[in-house]
Length: 550
Ligand code: CA
Image (cartoon, rainbow, N blue to C red):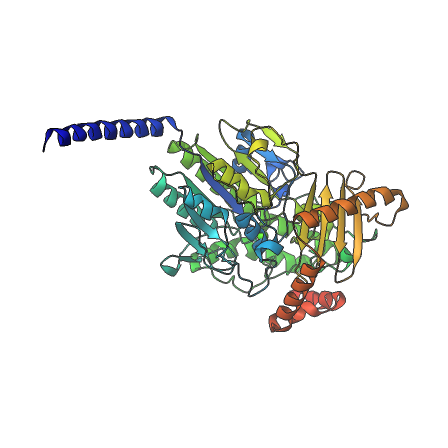
């Protein structure tokens, strides 16, 4: 080594040292980007979360989900783009409407195209560890996750099958608890990593057929829940599409499968689980056979059974949220982890006499959304802006400091979470539902919702317009589309609707394409045969199926 080489060597060493000192100082100074825990249940109505108030709040409280409201922000108007399980999940992952991400309906054989961009793929690119645990329901195994452990299809409430990178396997226990265990196990593995994490923990509960867990079975047997004022809705008031529905508690909800009024053993339960199950439902079934309610009394009986089962499933989900929050606290992750709670859509708890979802009416259009983000979101804040599940992906990318792909169709909610609503925030929300003919005979429709009005077009199957004045008619019982007093309002809404359809690139030729594709799918699938019955035939068939063998 000559003098020149030695000199160069010293210079290089000093430079390298300086470089590493600088980078380590930078790392020490830059706060770690927030972790994100996204908890989504399936069909969890905001009416069944006590933080949202309402008549069920004191009777069936959700103290753990309420912690998110106390410590974070509760959204009163989080709307979905297409109120049905799979399409809602596809919208969340892509930040795009169904007609753009291609997953328009839940019908058998629908598969989400996982080769397309999703927000979790971008999060991976910017250094996040990502996981999908629980119910995915997109007909495919996912990409965009470092780890996945999912239920196949709808999954089961008890002793579920799971699919992970190594294949399919079975587990013993109650699915809500198992999904929570799995999520906490995954957190345990990543909590000390230099990388931030994002986990989507997605429950099966409280989806139909509402099987309560072993710890919640029978917990509401002493409670009588108040009936919604529209339990006996007759669908008058110019609501022709609603008249054709097949989703009432009265004639569509099964006494045996849904409400457990049967002497057949519940499928999928082991001996011990079945013993606990029968100890609760056996005496109720015996009493039911004795009293044998009919007519309106039967509807009331069914409503109480429905609420008791549904809310028991919710109670297990609430405990799950509590376990995750406790885990974060115990492991020093509480301060730098955003926790989001939502559902894939809203749900009817007897309003309009219904269960299920699909409609652009309030209970299925609105989904719960609560966000806890310490140091950013003011504890106990409430937001009334029109936000959407379309916005979730962009919000998470914004949180991570990632670039938001220009073809995503939502808006980042980060400014709203900081308490500053952007001046260009949406004042109308676009919706489009495609699934007809289908299980509950809900006609295809699209439309817009504003703070004051709702304009809906049942465009193909019956070609009818509905206009609802949300201030005067909060229960959504009257179609005022043809009322001359609303002529000006109607014209403005039509214009807004057309603007949004153009903005989101939805149009009649796309509708036509999806109608043809959907009808072809229905035509070749014999399982869907009964969907093609007339509403009267539907009801007759369901009455027969709903009648319990005595
Ligand atoms: Ca759902």
